Length: 74
Image (cartoon, rainbow, N blue to C red; front, side, top):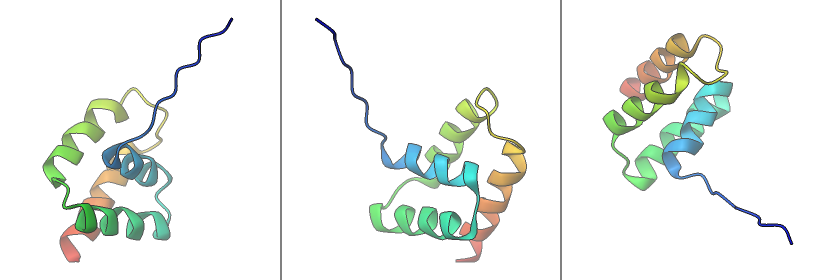
């Protein structure tokens, strides 16, 4: 018998995957999710930087700074 574990991403994790891809539609989706779900941007930032450095996200700092700039322009 095999044991299967299923995990689901929360909204913060979904946005982090969108920032990692960083295409225009992903940035727009991430901002829309933050607004619609009334997420805490600082919590997102902390979570992102907690995992981004050890994850395989190229230019992770630049990508978040770009996302944050778009968030502030909204």
